[in-house]
Image (cartoon, rainbow, N blue to C red; front, side, top):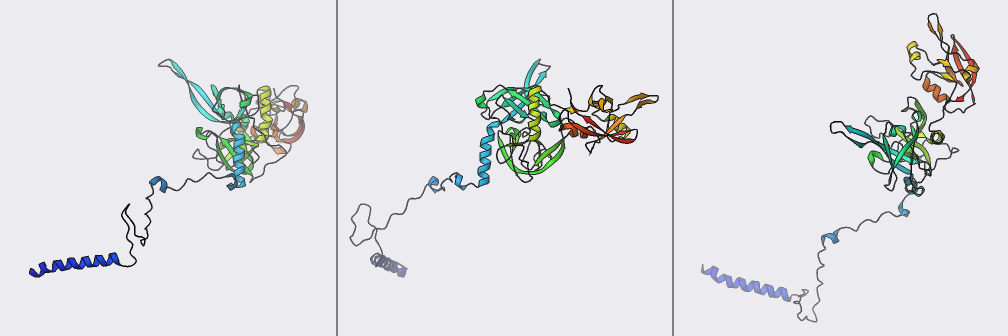
Length: 392
């Protein structure tokens, strides 16, 4: 016990001596007290840097890309969108819902789609299926300004409809149609603008995947020469423009091929050549012009299906019409019932198996133009020349 009590002062003396040695050791710097005097031989130790705040510690915001950093394709897409977005509109149809219990009636949205401004007179082009059975229509321009629209006319067989709004001319920016002299090519750029799912002015890009596609339209016949694209087209894109890299209209987005109801990379557009031909006719007369042979037929093809006939049966011939002048024969009454007359099986060498084929074979013809009609008469094939006429 005495040994332990005697050793404690010695340990304290040793620790003190070590501390004194460390203070006086060469190379050690003594930091003066704040505000106190400093020895001339002492070197000042720099203060520790302040701890950065949370905000100062965050990396600086990334500036938006400059035009110089964009590739040429991006600059082109941006330019086309800025140019054509003001021409693209949002079309909403409304229907009157009657509550018979409460005795009230209210208009509710019943569908929507896209469209585009055709001219400075306020004509707007969209799909027939976008406006079908609509009781009232609203067109909203890019600036969120909405106008009531009235239906001018439709062509269901091409899925085309023309509306008209009374908007100031300065608010209307007509779309530019691609020149007819520039044929489309598979692989060229395709840009779609529309309002999918009601999302205003959405842009998607892709390429033209195929040309000359045949798709069944809303009017009961197939639409020929459709454009196929992989630019995403979703519900609400219908009626919107499909554009080339120059911002010219090359088609109107119409439908998609999808089992899920959303874009699967296969979309179809009515070609601008068809739109440029049909729309002025609807504006001028309220309907699309159609040529025919001056015959009566059944578009439902019931008699042909019942008898297993491939072709179009001439049900009757309009007196004084081109078919009458060419000597075509319709059905007649015999002792045992109806007697078959002529069956149209070809137009200008193209086989005709039903009304769809006949309609599309004559669709591009002009009034007065002559066509060679292949007929089946009494089991024998014959060919006559008929001048088509404008149907009234």
